[in-house]
Each structure stands twice: as C-alpha cells, then as structure tokens.
Image 1: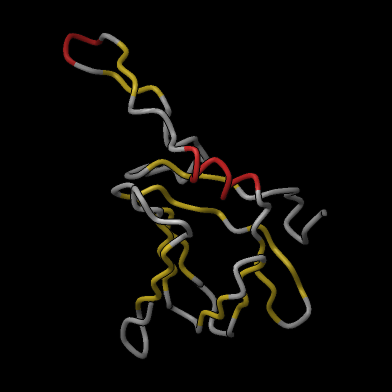
Image 2: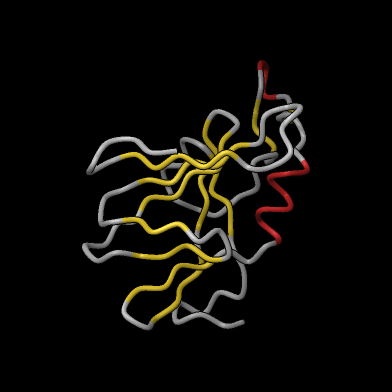
Length: 122
C-alpha cells in the first residue's frame, strides 16, 4: 500500500535522534573509546509490529505510522489536530494523544496504552 507521504510501510526512529532520521531500534552507536557497540537486538514482537505496515487514517487520507522506540516500547503521537485511526490496531487518537505499544514476557498479545488529552486508557 502506498501512502500520501510516499512510504510503503511503517518505520522506526531511534530514541533521542535529534535529526528524526528513521533508524532501527537496534542501530549501532559509538561506545567508550570510539568503539562501535550494538544495542540489544530488536525484540521479535517489535519487528512484527514494524512489518504490519501500520498506518493512520485521517479525513480519508492515509499515512505511514513512524514508531519511536523508547524504553522497550513502540510509541506514536498524533501530531495533528484531527482524530486519527491507527490500522490494523483499531485505535483512535485525538490530536496530541500518544499510543504506546509493548509486549511483556508471558503475554499473549500487545498491550496498548493511550496518553494525552482525556487521560490514560489501556
């Protein structure tokens, strides 16, 4: 599926990325003494979420969801003013609300939490 912004599937951004460049949660980074170190591998559930081609619809237009990887969670914030629906998760986000997705060990499904206007709902 091609979205209005030209993307074909969901993308990930690395936590703390000032440039907003899309990177995998397992991106290399420089450690002590300039040696390259590697973050822990991307959890399989997060890779599956990225492969699900999540997209948001608003006013009949669709765009790819760009997940941020923060503290072991996949996070997306609706930066617009209108309500968006995140597919295939079926979650609606008002403008300014954030969706947090995680998969705890032993769980059989994703845990979804929405933060922002109107409080927290799970």
